[in-house]
Length: 267
Image 1 (cartoon, one colour):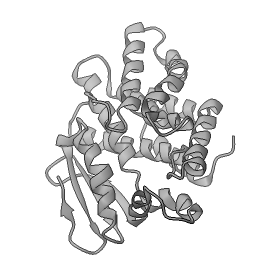
Image 2 (cartoon, one colour; image 1 turned 120 degrees about the vertical axis):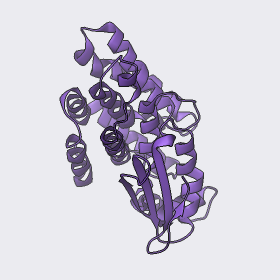
Image 3 (cartoon, helix red, strand yellow; image 1 turned 90 degrees about the horizontal axis):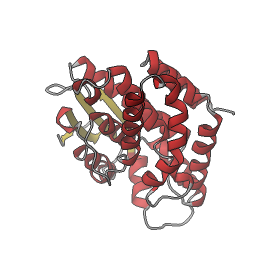
């Protein structure tokens, strides 16, 4: 199982944000050969066969890192996620759910694009059970709860399915925030003829940096810096709809604009 230097860096960054069971699940996923094979094949299908952007290990791990940063920002603002709010789990349990869902969310791309968020659940369920059973084997109620929470995160990451927890909302936004230019680099290099859907690739190429930081009035500020105005399509067609579909929306400020110019406030 060979990992790129970029993957290794992202993994280390994720581990810096977690401890306890959340760290255990992260390490288990990073070392799991079946997950690595699924992530790798999902990327091959996405890029080579379908001509889409990165849906492989780097993307899934970047989305997971984004989600952990968002978890930190909510925690620092005193916002409790649903498991803790409802007294059926802890912040640590919430991170286990968010991490597992985000690191598996696109494995359905190994089959195809259409309904991949739902197809991915079929592929993920035995893996989820295998991963979390050692952590929750003494508490069947917690085991069932965690499995359902992880499935909700995978099912909801395309904003096609209604989600109801902050945990699933973090998976959705963590995924949506991975839109910097590097994600579309390979498909742009491979493409030789114009085709339907190119606007997504070119608009993604315009996004220079997504910054996740503490907001001025809300716990989270998402800032998208772009090199040219075509990047606004990526914000308005991809990121903004995901945020508005997420239970985390009330805690987010969203700004976007060309680097060096005044940022447009969406939220």
